[in-house]
Amino acid sequence: MRRDYFTLDVENIDWVDEDGSPSKPTVIIDFEGPSSTLRERLSGPDGDLLTADETDVTFRLQESVDEPDATGVVSVTNRTTGDFILELNEEAEDVLKFIRAARTYGQKTSDTDGRYHVEIAINGDDEVEYDKSTFLVYNDEGNLLRQHSLIPSGVEL
Image (cartoon, rainbow, N blue to C red; front, side, top):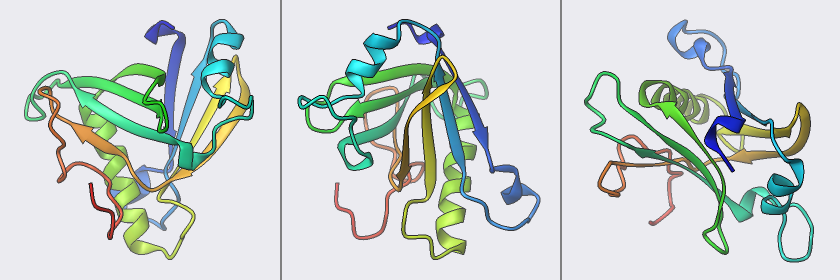
């Protein structure tokens, strides 16, 4: 699947900079391509859609995080197989701002269902929704950047 088949929008992140009321950050990924391909990747061997616990969300930088125009790849993967479900290019500044909002949301609320929400749509129709607490960030050499990642307390990597 081509990365340009995907669009990514975010909601509920500006409240952090505006010192507003906490609202769960949401990322909406819409796929505009052959629906059967993505639907198959979003499903387990039994044909049921993967759950939040069966997926991982990561960001791999393509250059140093200190570069002003750094970019990277947002990925959603199947936790069991390690297979990529989807990938799309994004600016590092935007992704890190989203992660900061999710971290702040977790610190300011008692929401135990996750620190951020993910919606994946196919041609505008919602396919899956996940509440997640982990968002891992890797540098351009493949090393985990703990200070930029969203890792719940008590989780050992």
